[in-house]
Amino acid sequence: MGTFASNVIILNIILRLLSFSSMEGLQTERSIREGEYWREKALAAPRASFRKIHYYERSIKADPADALAHLELAEVYFDLAISYGHRDLYDNAEEGLKNALKEDPLLVPAHYRLGMLYFMRGEFRQSRIELEEAHRLDPEYLPAVNSLRMLRSEAQKNEH
Image: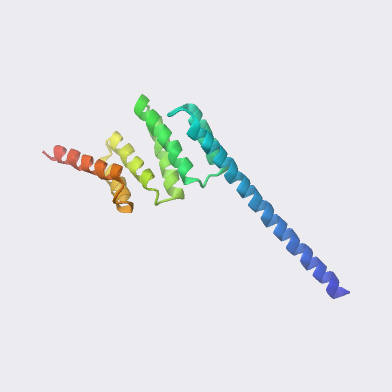
């Protein structure tokens, strides 16, 4: 009887652990689905709009590990910063790009956008580092190739 009781207790513990891990898995899956839902709403919103920012922020809150959501939010801030020239929008874009790269350091468009952001600020050394990283990761990524060419041309003008 003692063996049966101990087996029941062990089985009960195993079942609780399995249900706990499956509940945790369900919560993670739910968060990812919620993040995808808000990301889809953001993609459908008008370009460079504050509604788009709201949707991306909700997506990231639901799934903080979604590097593409961080990148896309940063692109909205970047577009708004170019349109309105507000320094805080550039800062928000930079933060979003760094978050995207924290989640996925191989995300070429994030390196490219960060390089362009630094270029717009006149931080040419940082710009070159990010653009070269984008080019190193994907030598065929034309925006980085063209931007590096432009940056080198600008550097040559400043030397003369």
